[in-house]
Image 1 (cartoon, rainbow, N blue to C red):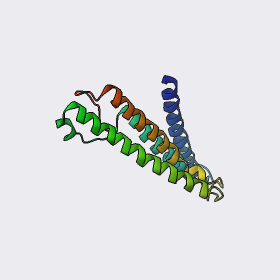
Image 2 (cartoon, rainbow, N blue to C red):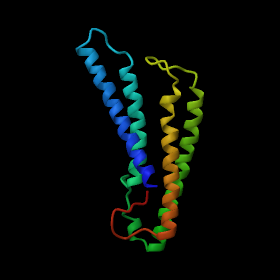
Image 3 (cartoon, rainbow, N blue to C red):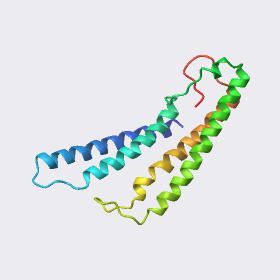
Image 4 (tube, rainbow, N blue to C red):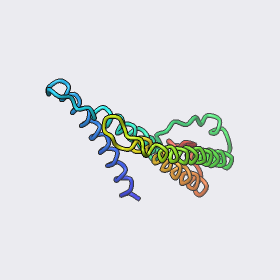
Amino acid sequence: MKWLHRAEDAFLLGLFLAALGALTAQLASRYFLPYQFPWTEELARFLFLWLVFFGAANAMRRGGLVAVTMLADLLPDRLRDAVAILMHLFGALFLAVVAWTGLFLAIKVAKLPTIAMGISSSFEYAAVPAACALMCVRSLWAAWQVYRHGLPRDGAATLM
């Protein structure tokens, strides 16, 4: 599992560096070259879209998403665990619906080319279902972990 986490971190770093490179090329072509690259803005936008959604999945893996636990912390341990499991399951259901809908939308726009680069619009739209599917799996895994081990009373454990 550790190699998968490293691969995800490397993927995010690659997305960031590619977006930074596209923006640098845009600035260089605008101010230092006689010809502007028309594809740089669109590529940077697509890469940042992927970066945002997979960054959210990465934040979920690291426990960095916001959860308000004030009322749940007042509950007894078993009831608190049940609330956490329900929250993870509802989150997984929501993410599965978004992933499923996003997949159909990405398929629907597959034949539409992007304006500047002329590639399939599915590249842009596929970020949502791919990242939501990953977060759905992570929500189900978190629910399973809470079921097996419970939520700790101290530390940064959250309900989502």
